[in-house]
Every structure is written in structure tokens, then in C-alpha cells.
Amino acid sequence: MLWILAILGLILLTVLLWRAFGPTLLGRTDNTPRTVGPDDDPEFLWRIKRDLSKERPADPKRTDPQNESGEA
Picture (cartoon, rainbow, N blue to C red):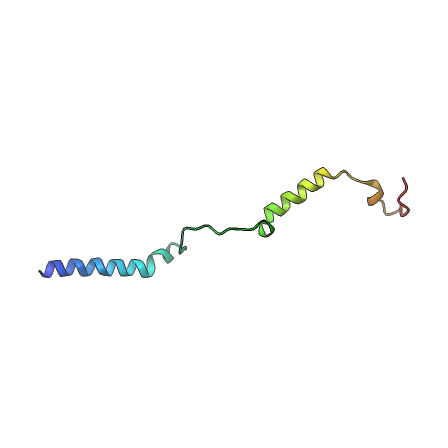
């Protein structure tokens, strides 16, 4: 009878310790990944900027500081 109580006590102690310290020792509390919005993702913003610069041709009228009248 004493063996059965000792085994049950050991199982109970193991379960309680696992509940108290188990998941946090691994550095996470749940399995759901953190969702990052596009405006918070630096890689996404970098790709958008890169794609926009590829699509937009260089406009000499806009980049030439000497040409203030806008004529070519």
C-alpha cells in the first residue's frame, strides 16, 4: 500500500513541477507564432522600396537641381 501512495505522490509531484516550470524552461509558453503585420516587417518594406525603384524610371527633370523650370 505504501508503494502505491509513493508512486502516486511521485506522479503528482512530476505533473505539478512540469506545469509550473516545464513550458517556460523551453523559452515559449504557447505554440502559436507571432503574426507580424506588413508595416512592421522591415524585409517587406525593403522589398516594396526596391520594387518601386525598379518600376520608376529615372526622370532627369526631377533629379536635375540646375533645371528649375522643368524644361528639357
